[in-house]
Image (cartoon, rainbow, N blue to C red; front, side, top):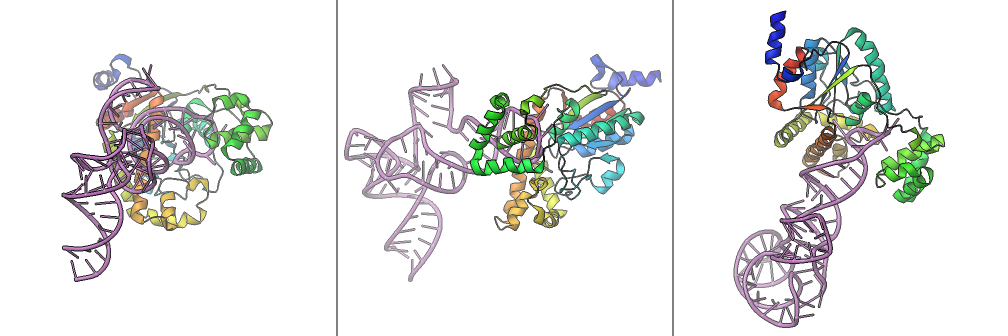
Amino acid sequence: MKNESEAQHRFAPFSIPNYNRLMKKNTLIVIAGPTASGKTAFAIELAKTLDTVILSADSRQFYKEMSIGTAAPTVEELRQAKHYFVHHISIEDKYDVADYEQDVIQLLDELFKTHDAVIMTGGSGLFIDAVCNGIDAMPDVQPEIREKVEKLYQDKGLHGLQEALQRLDPDYYATVDQQNPRRLQRALEVCYQTRKPFSSFRSGNTAKRDFDIKKYALLWDRQQLIERIDKRVDMMIEQGLLEEAKALYPKRHLNALNTVGYKELFAYFDGGCSLKEAVEQIKIHTRQYAKRQMTWLRKDIGYRWIMPENFDNTLSTLQQGLA
RNA sequence: GGGGGAGUCGCAUAGUGGCAAUUGCAACAGACUGUAAAUCUGUCCGGGAAUCCGUUCGGUGGUUCGAGUCCACCUUCCCCCA
């Protein structure tokens, strides 16, 4: 036993100055990274040796109707480790970050009773953030209110939204991205729903969680990542993405289907472009998505960045319960 | 061989005498507390934080105070007739 710990001390790559035994109790290990970085496989390997489970933080793998196009874990992968939040809802369901945060925290409470560590992996920055730092509680917005705000946007455009928000919540208006209709709309929805300014619900506080969080980001050199993305898109087509998209086509107006890999094929079905062009668009849009993910990761200094050549030893370090 | 059309900042596109030059895409950087694989912003000929400076619109000459825009020749490409 003594020897083993000495060996770990000597060989664990990050352990020299800050050696600590990590998996003492209640640690959430976050494995992030841009799309196609290899998160799924990494997380599964880790889950197997740690004998724990995986919580997906991928806002599109939630939907049971979307498998191929979201690169959701395969049946085989799902067999290798217990996954949560993969295909657990339908594209017809209403589900947002707040729902997710609540579900995850509740589940973690249970899981930590029997597991020292739980893995979370996925590429949705906001969702990971909500779990790690919390998100302010806000009342639900009724569908009629959302429609009302949407109508305001349709009728009066961005200006209409800007004017309304400036009137109802000048504080927030001063800090929002005033060019972004989505931001304006959301704030207005809450204002109309609650008759209070949106900003009155924003505490800016970071939630205190009763578990440790260790964050890792799997990163690739740009060119390599592009090649991986291109290859994976081709593979999705081979695996039948066309059929999957075709089946979903009638529901294409659902928000869940405003998603890379589907919307481009819908355009093709509509005769807007050739299949070849659609596939090329999917590749391009996926790269752009990966880029946005990188922006998210870069601004969070809590991440430990792992390059491909270090995937293996990081994995084994984690597998040994060190960090 | 004859006739017609066209070469603009990575690609595509606007511009017909005052333009460093339109728009779209791509690219790069960024924002983002409930639509987030969504949505939005900035940059995008070179130099500069910037007023600005320097070099541009296939090539070479020319006309003009001034040319991407007009003229001549050259060159490349496309279409039609042979």
